Image (cartoon, rainbow, N blue to C red; front, top):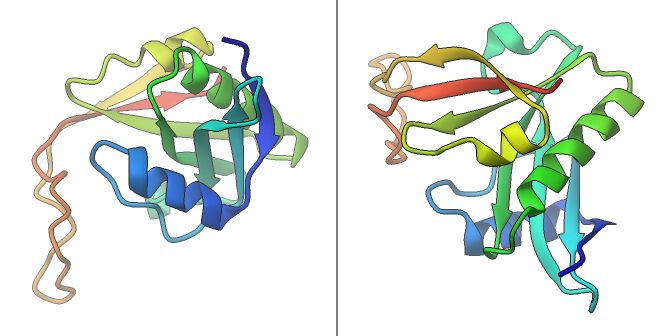
Length: 149
């Protein structure tokens, strides 16, 4: 199957993520979104890129691939990670990062030339007494931080 990159509106990317992502809801915002479509024009995968979730990484020169989702088509994530990095560079950004959860291989990221930067231990989530947060089901899971080449 031949895939090609297509522009995707944020609301359409969010709808795709809501339907196909395994463990996250769509992110609240984005700097840009990109999709992969098949030869018939059917959207098969999306990537949503925004400001880094971690405040200390939000320096104005870094973006984060906050979501990718596919309907199971092969190699789409690698294509989208590569396209996201090229787009971020074209917009003047110097760094693009993303995270995988424990148990995810990172094969798509390696296929796009990304490298592991750090291993993050499991954390209890963002909830604290001064700012209560609703659990999202991803607490207590180790993560791997990746960086584009």
